[in-house]
Length: 174
Image (cartoon, rainbow, N blue to C red):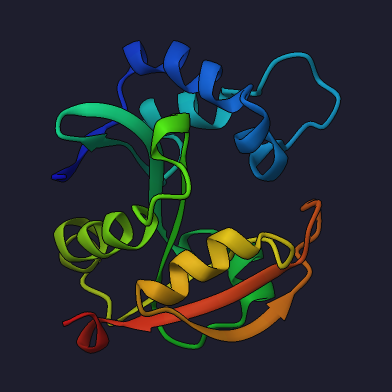
């Protein structure tokens, strides 16, 4: 299976909304628990250039199957302060939405390709940080398979779960 990434566009927002309502996505990505619909304002702000996060669809053989985003941690000073990374670093978040793609070992290869094709070349950093919820065992396993290693756990104000911060250096991607 070939994985690629398509920059998020306005016409993708209905698909994102559908995915964000799926129970297995909503469990970890719901910023407004109890709200009947997901809040798409952050994605819209990024599309308008008001938020520096780079958003992408994950494509498997050309079919949209999930979402992945990347950013420079220091672009959000409040988050950077809580994370406490001393060097300029990129952050990444993702989910696989389509049920037929879940629990099949796709997370690690998706993430490694994204780091190789997008994150390290785009931001010119030597370090990437990912922060799954400490309770999200499946994500943590996938990120470990991609080469990420546990750094520390932190509580981020406004987040429902503490984050398990994991790091991967560019030279360790090879």
